[in-house]
Length: 105
Image (cartoon, rainbow, N blue to C red):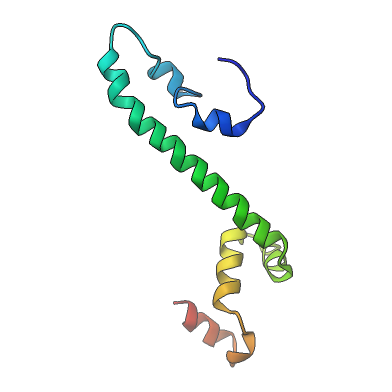
């Protein structure tokens, strides 16, 4: 396998990584290659979409001061910080922290 510096190329190659040992095209089992190629390509497309979504999410979180502050709490990552920020958009509408907890349930 040729090393590449483009991570997208690695994701979109259905026979990359650990799958290459199992799914190498062979003359002995062409029907196996045909049956596994389409689901593997779809898996690669989903992986690429998730990676693009996470990059966009991290861009939003990095530009938001509240999210960055929330992520200083152990166990709070980008998804939790952004979810909390979107749910508690106007903190003044909550009387106390218990009211915030009830809203999040």
